[in-house]
Image (cartoon, rainbow, N blue to C red; front, side):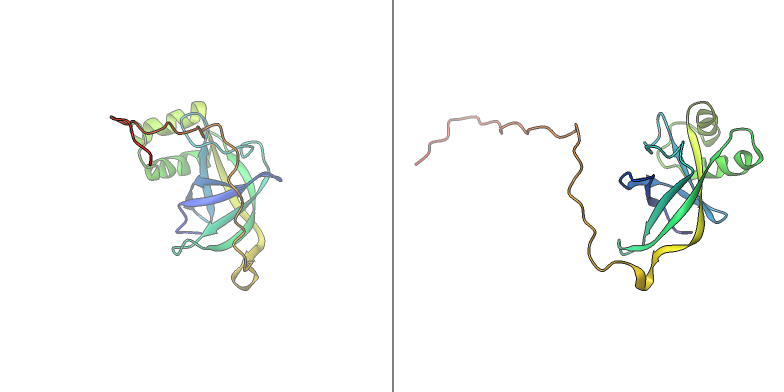
Length: 154
């Protein structure tokens, strides 16, 4: 977990969503909300399922997590939020400005492992677990290519 940069997080029976995260003190921290990544249901959830992948791209562990919202102004917030903000790539503004924006508009969630892993090592499934792409409004029909002249068919 200490090398994780992306975690696949599933809340309740929903699909797993790839989220940018920061490992810190035995937990994963995830920032979500306006201007950050979308983490459907995570802010309201009390538990989630987390899957991490290794350097080779394959799944290495899946575990159940207790989800806790880190409240702005708390001791945990003053310790963790600046460290998480410092790891945020391509952030608009400084880490201090990012922490202020998170306090006003976003949610910082702390995912702490509960019990033993659900799957790791020999208990990992052998099949790919690939799923068909989810429907999205981002898909559109591509335009036909532009042609300067008429193409004759034989």
